[in-house]
Amino acid sequence: MEKMKPLNYPVKYAIMEIFEQTGWNYGLNELERDYEVVANIVVKCYVVGERIKYFNDGSRSIKYEVVFLYRESMEAYQLFKINYPEYNLFTNECTNSVFVPTLFNTFSEAKAMANKANDEILDKKIMRIHFGKSLKDDIAKIEEEHNKTLTKYQIVEEDLEDKTKDVEITELKEIDNLSRDELIVKRILSK
Image 1 (cartoon, one colour):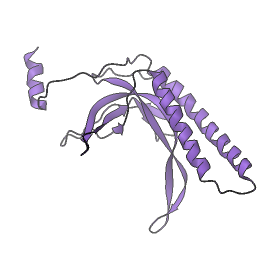
Image 2 (image 1 turned 45 degrees about the vertical axis):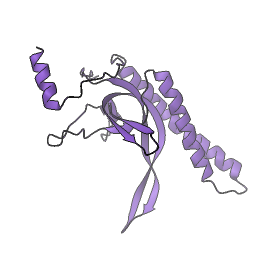
Image 3 (image 1 turned 90 degrees about the vertical axis):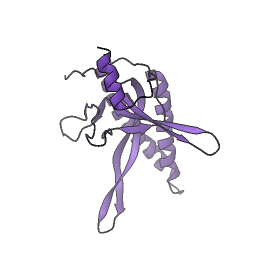
C-alpha cells in the first residue's frame, strides 16, 4: 500500500459526490451518457483555496476549493487512487480541485451530512416514479438499489478512512494578505 506524502495544506473532512452513469440522453447526433450523483461519501481533503461571493443583501457565501486525498480511478484494478493537488504552471490554478460548501473537523459531523444528502438522492428517485398499481413494488425496488449502492460506497468510505488514518485534521490558518512573491521572499528571509 502506497503511503501518503505529507503536504502543508490544511486537511479537513468533506463530502465527495460519487457520479455514475444512470441512463442515456438524446444528444445532437447520437445518444449521450447521463451521469448523476448516486452517493455521497466522507473523505479527507486538502484545502487549497476558498471563494467568497458577496450578495446585494449584505450576505455572503463561501465555497472551499479542495482536493480529495483519493479520487476515482479509471484503471480497472483499483476504484480509488491517491490524489495530490496539481497546478497549471501558467495560471497557478489547481487543475484537480472541486468546490464544496462545507468543511468538517470530525468524521461523524461529515457523515451525518452525507447521510442526509443520500436520503435526498433517494427522495428524488422516488419522486420520479409514475403513480400506478405497482407503486409499492417500484418504491421497494428503488430503495433496494439505492441501499445496494450505498453499501458498496460505504465499504469504499471505510477503506479510504483507514488508508488516511495517519493524516491528521488541521486548522485553517490566517495568513498575511501578501502576494505569492512576497510570501516566497518572507519564507527565504525567515530561514
